[in-house]
Image (cartoon, rainbow, N blue to C red; front, side, top):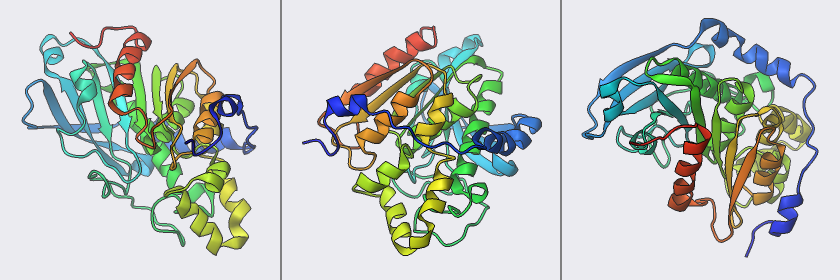
Length: 329
């Protein structure tokens, strides 16, 4: 049975979410220092044990110049001919990290430059990370969703979104990458990060793969989600009864269903109708808000795992078309 509304109602759901009056100015000010600095990254070759993929440990300059770590995977065959590659920046789900060098290599095997990026302070859940978060915050629930939520300027996801833009800029600047053919991708929290980057750097994003995105239509999500991370926010607001509007005011600056109005690249979404973590209605809110051409794949009987390997097949074919190139030899 569905955990949200019937599919017909979901397809019609287009909420008029409030947008902060200074939203564009807020993000322009946030990103201005790193845009002025330009992309900066170092690459150190690593031995993964794989023969079809070559890998590098990456350290790039994120928000406030804080180091963000990633893996860059390149198809070995493409290295031999030196041709410029299309690319994918992959963002991680909640409390996941870049993992070990061999863990996430799908897009390199498909013929792309594949940048697998940490999310600051995360990577001690379902896979490991290597990036800290030097900034502190006030009182918060365990987890990341409420860190610094008292004020948009100190909010955790302001830094995380800026890091995600820096990762895109780094991959676009790599000498073996065709910067005009770089996509962003992610599931859950990674889907929110991919949406934010597509909105905040639309001139650089050629396509977006957004699966069961987190941080979309957050007020509704907090009302109907049945699991963490949204329950972190519920518990925080249960304790801080006087901060409800303050918290949602901060969240409006990072809400994927608000930022999606600025995303113009072609996008492929996925939604799972039994998703208890990111309610389907909130996914449809982001999908319907997307400013560019967008498609959505619906998985009626799946929870937050979404379409899994079946959807990956769809993504490979879709991205080949979106980037205008054959991805694999």
